[in-house]
Image (cartoon, rainbow, N blue to C red; front, side):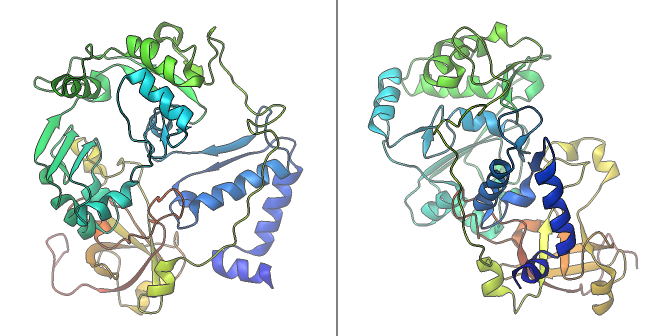
Length: 430
């Protein structure tokens, strides 16, 4: 019974699930990879935990050619988390509510720091609307195009007393800012990127920043100096040696000159020895802990599934990166010029939709008009679209439902209905 229900919910034949499970379990060495299709759900965190459970059950931990590998959605997500960009942790993943960690940070920086957990992104928007969050400084993030439920996001940002955006281009988000700080691209600054295998890689400036712009690190230093916290000019080598290696335990031996061409995998000991394998004999906590959380239907479908019978899931295309802020300004824009809606021919026939027709996609939050592309790449009842172009603003229809733990938005399940658009559009032939 449960297997049949699983097949019904996932749309994957039970025989294929069984075959994949047996193949993975019997393999001498097996690696799993997952991306945003796993994490951008209301139970995404628990799904990752279940994947880790499977790796432990089958012994695919602590040796070469195994492990659980997240394919992060943005460059240097790993590095940002290492440096403490999550509100419940400081640099090095140390709990900010732990008195010992709190004292460590305050003693090192010589400043009074909050000892409570800050807001995650969805909480920031709610706090801004409630008047509890007064100022926001966004660096290289186009929330007004990429975050879900666009009207909600824009309303929240408009309530801020001070909204600062640090960017390369005048994005949809930068248009809402009180102050825009012109940043530099990765080719115009030096620093480090950390990838999914914990490899700290040296990135070196190859061209000077465009006149009037500065590297992000230098902009932050300039603001710190103006606010009375004296800092030297941004320099990745001294920053690694004098700050990061002193405060992040697993960066203890990281020095700029040691990174070379291939970088180092953390944890890096004080003598510069790095770690290509983790969890060889045991986990940091000792024995592994199995975590189970029962599946439940997302609130989006429970509340809206009857009125909006289709599911749309957002995706990306090779030609454009995320919201297209950079790639739409390259020749890639000549290859892929607009967002489109992938729709199964059976569903298209029900609504008299032909390939290239404009389709009105409606959710509980709003509606968008987007060109149809008939394809069997999506199953009946499932739609999919990119969100690279602000002319469409696909996130007008996505929801504020998010993962229960990490609060990652649920971009992969949005309840919608569709109809052939009324009238004629400039990108549709007469």
